[in-house]
Length: 139
Image (cartoon, rainbow, N blue to C red; front, side, top):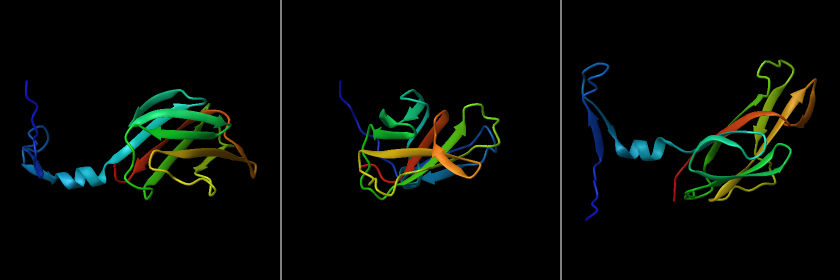
């Protein structure tokens, strides 16, 4: 059995479901403008759902290492985070998220750090749902 390659620069559809009008998109837009990794997880290493995520390592309270299945081309990617308190109704906790300034991005993984602000005090994120998405170029 032979395997083949399909090569094209533009995708075109009749969009018969919504408007019945032909629409097209340059495939470089899909390649360059799509999320390359995302994950949603609860405390610990339980991935609820993910894309291009091979492992999640719990390094301690609110500190995780996200390892890609397919590496990024360079370390010039962007990370978008979200965090939510466990009860999802608490108005006293606002999640703050990001990578530490002393943590460098790598092509194979990045560190995710979550904290919470409660009454003006910043503490570690200890319970809730968290996740992130990566935009950039795959290797």
